[in-house]
Length: 305
Image: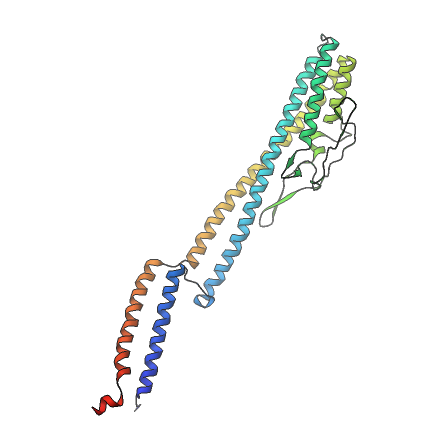
């Protein structure tokens, strides 16, 4: 028959008190932090999922920033192309006006003055920047693409051969998803060898206006129409990319909501259940202390009495 000694009772009492105190402390820690996982040992399986959700949320946050930047770039490109289209449309109106053959040379000179101003406006548009980056020079966005010198009449001499960088600016908008978002200046305004190169067309219009050659002025309408069609096509392409990026933005938003919900289910504490559990554990601990006080207070002197 096993003999139960006072030391055994005291050791068992301290063991139970420590266990109850530790359990109560763990519950109070969860209440204080709002998380049911405060260290790996709390839930080894849960901590694995928690870290995975955290990593995916971090990646998702970066993708969301990339999507926002891509949308800003696309919106700005669309705005600039719209401005370029307005210039081409005004050039066409002036060309039609000058092609009638009933304008005196003074009127043609006045039209040419506006054409020269439109040329300068077009050069400004072709050198547009977003956040310090030239949008029409591919990966060489830190270099001014249309660096024309001023001609003797004070306007830009656009006879210089311009080759913009064909590199693509890629935005990573999802896991393994890269989206090119830029357009090169040669694609928008034409290569030097293209008959409808916008700058060459403007020069041809200006020369014809200065010489009073109505036929030569009228001959440039087909080039203006061709270039306008190119700009409209470019805007359509940007619109399609914008729709794609907006869909990615919605997808990332939904994914962020789902991941956040899963993380909360894995990490967040159940306050209602913990409060009840904490109260029960507190009562158990107090009862342990009460019983323990009676056991420990007993000594050999008590028995001698």
